[in-house]
Length: 481
Ligand SMILES: Cc1ncc(COP(=O)(O)O)c(C=O)c1O
Image: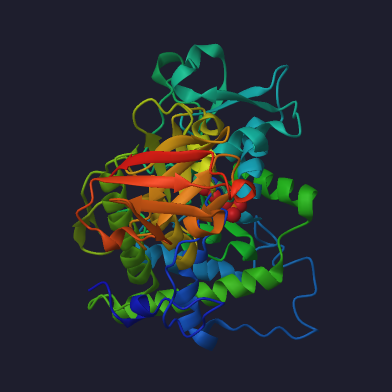
């Protein structure tokens, strides 16, 4: 099922034909896996060609208004219909009897929901909590305006419902760790506080769809469902009309509505997705976006687990197998982020990755332990492949040494079989460019490749600093491989 031509070609902007994508690792290149920028799905949309093209004439979509009769008066009818159709095709949320509020990304809807649930407000701001590890932006988005209506109160596990009124955010599947979640705080006499369910990742390429979600406020985002983060469209399904009205009011105050151009683009793309799902659902064709995404994510998780098992540096979360109503089979979650935990005595996972020029987001930002760090699984194919290759560099083969006072690290790149030296001030270089000789059995080898000596147990490395070329200062380092 997975692995047909659409995956094999892996086209990118730089390489539109997708042929011969180079996997050569470049350890000096900074890999940004901090943000969850969903470029992984670009090859699919490239393959769709003009199917999603939207043309808007200069005279069209000019008004602020869409339909005054609706609670959300700036929601375009085309988008409303497309959202309803998408949820009914996927089966991931109840839409009947719900009010749809569109937002500039689900980021705006989160703030709109806080405003709606907290207003008109009392003498003290209402506490906003979420079970740690929680999506790092909640804290910043909740606090940055220093609202008198609500305030961030951190980890829901550490919050007692007796501490006063609260809003609990439930992110499921969770960012950063991919877990499936329920509310954790019980208020007085077992009552829950007001709940916001952030279902950004409740789509079949990330996790099995086990039932249609049915909560008071559910937020979704186009950014993570299809990868079109740049369109900045999110939507909320809201049970209570008054809450939907207040959310709409918040968006009116903050941006007087949401781009109609974007709404039409999104409606068009949702239609193409639904057609793809309905036409091809039965035979698992990769024309079906969610089938493409499922295969891509499954392949990425499988290779990441293999690399991580081999290098022994990290632990990864495990996920239960569940029956997916959409795909009609049993599967594990394939989250949009990998929540890496450093093994052994490494205390700061983000720093450890940074030393290898990999930008991630450390556990502290998610209300968790710094031994964890989050890396995106949604980068472009090139970046993801480099990430896997980069991991081979910090395998158990690496070791530390000193050269003329500065620390260095020597490692074998499993992919190219070359030796690399990392000077700990951050510079990376292949051996030959730092004038490093490697010798085995008294024989000097320049530009040495481990592949030349597959049965090798020890390597002697002679390091000559450029400016001390005539008089080598540091002569020998042994590497156990
Ligand atoms: C859990 C969660 N909610 C909301 C968002 C924000 O999405 P949007 O791009 O729609 O603002 C993200 C983005 O990473 C997310 O991970």
